[in-house]
Image (cartoon, rainbow, N blue to C red; front, side, top):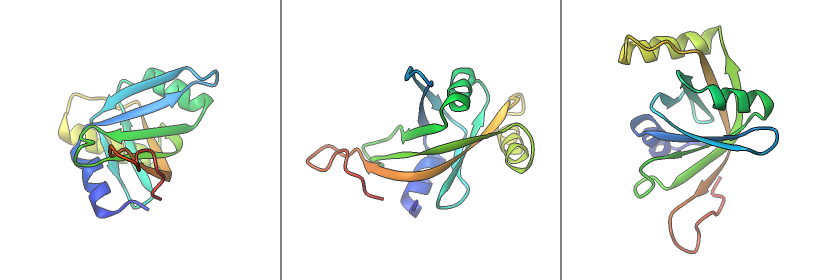
Length: 130
């Protein structure tokens, strides 16, 4: 589902993560520790994501967009699972601490991408592409 350009964009850019609580209250946060682990799943490291985690516990739907939408005009939607131990959590901790030794990840979020949309301005804006 994710092509090489999308994978590269997610790995190299700040990503904005959107969630909503069970009552529909939205939350949007910038995240620096985000990377695809294959062509369908994206690992997100939770360092300071209290509202995001609360939302995902109530409603596992998640959407992300890369900061540089001019070059990478994609929105990714899917479902998230939270890991506070195990393989994905350990991978998240190791990665984050290799970049910034002082961070203490609280959990790992594994997003399964289910839909991809274009956000490129023009007549196809908002069109589902995968």
